[in-house]
Length: 363
Image 1 (spheres, rainbow, N blue to C red):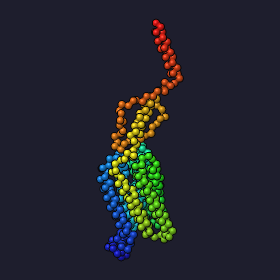
Image 2 (cartoon, rainbow, N blue to C red):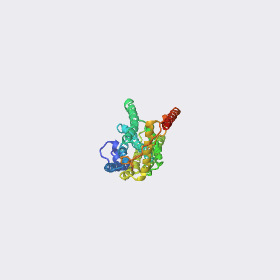
Image 3 (cartoon, rainbow, N blue to C red):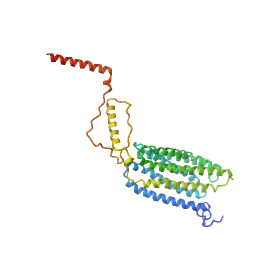
Image 4 (cartoon, rainbow, N blue to C red):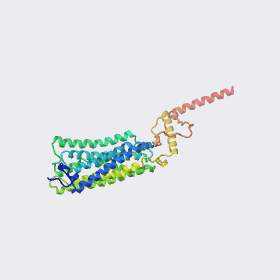
């Protein structure tokens, strides 16, 4: 087979990378390379700007946002594995990396949305360590699923994915991504709740997540439908339609991640916190006073009633200091004093004291 125009003496599996007649290969290669370059630039800008962030609640989000940009960079890089023809090397890479990279990105969005639900309500947010655990844990599930399938299919059964039937390969590919689909839809549902709260400054971040996931759902619904519908005319040969379809899905979704989420979040990263983003000083002072009252009562008479709702602390992490440090302590009557026997004993002692005082007066 003679090399196509634009290609030299290379392996036929790489013809789509240089074939000037295969427009989809050259076009997607250019878009993927541009997306990877943009991801690197944004990653560098994010790293530099992260040192200028003063808001503690925004600092806690930096690790998962850093992972999100890395996942987007991996998505653009994975596009080349779909432009190269399917073989025994690119097959496992496609089946493992596709779901894992998207699981990482959607896990970051889900964790961010869950943290925003607390911030818009004025409650203490998740810690940096907790958000990292949630993100890595959710991604690890997809890694286990993909690796287990690949090991069982390729290693144990000795199945060559390049020679697998087109219909079966597409079905297996979609089945491996069921967890990612559930994760994506669940993240979208959670992101809609970020619009319910008193502190509007955090709602803008929730809107970025919601719009990003809405476009992602539309992209995934489209390519899965087209992929399964292409099996109707399957002839059992290696599909050339799967390659451009999945490559387009990767590139488009990668650019959606960059334009709808990463770029706006970087723009809002160094903006100082606004007073309307956090509870006012009066609310914080009332909350501290109520909390002190509850603690004073619990030390004398523990009671399940009167549990106090947590309130978000200021972004500098120093805590709220009341204007007047000489505050009156809060007292409460112990429950033992309210018992009838105790009251009766107190009445007897009072009568005895009164009688003794009267006798002393007469003398």
